[in-house]
Image (cartoon, rainbow, N blue to C red; front, side):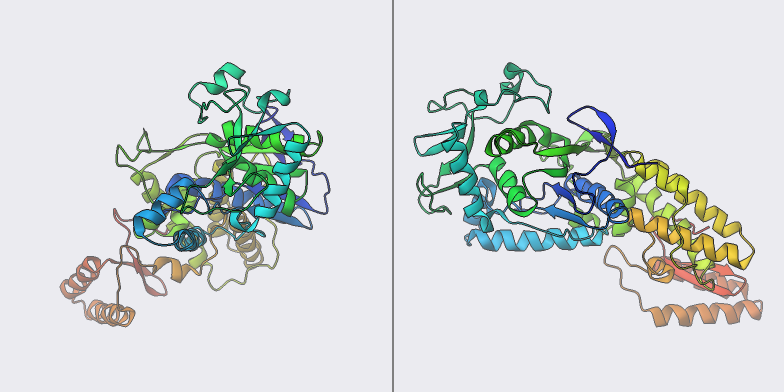
Amino acid sequence: MPLQLYNTLTRQKEDFQPGDPTRVTLYVCGPTVYNYAHIGNARPAVVFDVLYRLLQRTYPCVVYARNITDIDDKINKAAIDAGVPFTEITEKFARIYRDDMAALGVLPPDLEPKVTENMPAIVDMIARLVDNGHAYEAEGHVLFHVASFAEYGRLSKRAPEDMLAGARVEVAPYKKDPGDFVLWKPSEDGAPGWDSPWGRGRPGWHIECSSMIEAHLGETIDIHGGGHDLIFPHHENEIAQSTCAHNGKLYCRTWMHNGFVNVEKEKMSKSIGNVLLVHDLLRQAPGEAIRLALLSAHYRQPLDWTASGLTQARRTLDGLYGVLRRLEDVQAEPESPAPPSFMAALQDDLNTPKAIAELSALAKAADAATALPERAALKGALLSAGWFLGLLGQDPETWFRAAVDGKKIDAQEVERLIAEREAARKTKNFVRADEIRDHLAKMGVGLEDTATGTIWRFEQPGGGTDA
């Protein structure tokens, strides 16, 4: 079946048809780097990583750009509070973001444009908007005149009066209309700024993505992604300024937005104190388990993040890696394709819950198979399907022995105790054997006795199986 994606602009699923099948373009709004990423920030990175993987296996060339916003009021404040140059803040948290996303199995994008490295392109686009009458200068600011774009509101499906209610717009006396938004604003003394025809300043938020897309991907792109909260005003404003800068040319063919992440059925909020940082979660659970938990709901739906859901994700991966461990002596058939039913799930607007169910069914079939050719083919298919979801890329032993919570265990000591336990069992000293098992359990090591010997792993809280 063809790849179908839900287009926020048309509010329906559509067959994906890139403008140029030999060069598919994907842009996702990236982080503003002034602090650690929370689990809500991680969801679009993981979701669009799955899309990126799917597109890579479907088209000969995919160009994926995910920007870095490295100039912003919050960045400036963080730098002032820390008493350091703003670049020290942005470089630190950009590095941490990349490392945290890599721990979740997120592939690096092909392009990672930074706002501060694209000022000439930003100034050029603003100048064109001023020249063609869609923007104006007022008191050192340059603003986009919303009334000049008749289709404004088409993406968010909001009436003009609704757009102002609760929107992040500043009603200032220098605006022609309250909904007009800033393209360029003056920098205060001591704050970062760049020269422009309108004075020293810096860009508004919305123009940054439009200009970087034009500079790195072209005037029209195939897919633009981001969180649901970006539909308005950010993406609505992107459409307006880019369409007008390009004399009415289509800006983006398909708009995709992922749902919010709540925590234990409550909105994530600093005031509640339930903001979960990826950096902290990685000390509690493997990145792969966090990734699976993020993919457990359809990307367009809200995701309720729970501790039990993360535990279940670890147990699910225990089961999948347990199958691979039992197939350790089987050479996977090279380039075995993922099953059609699995691919159909992903091609149906990234239905990851269905794809995960198909992955589990495939693992059960591989575990039950007895003929070597079938086992080899099913193992290959399992690994191929796992790749699309960013799962099952580790050696099974690495998975089961991965430490979390800062645990550091001497593997040689564990092996010595297992050997001592085996000797005790052979002499029917079951009391000593049980003492060793209990001691290992207190160390955080779980044992599994198999026909070929005892294998061990770090035990997750609440237990778990690899069956």
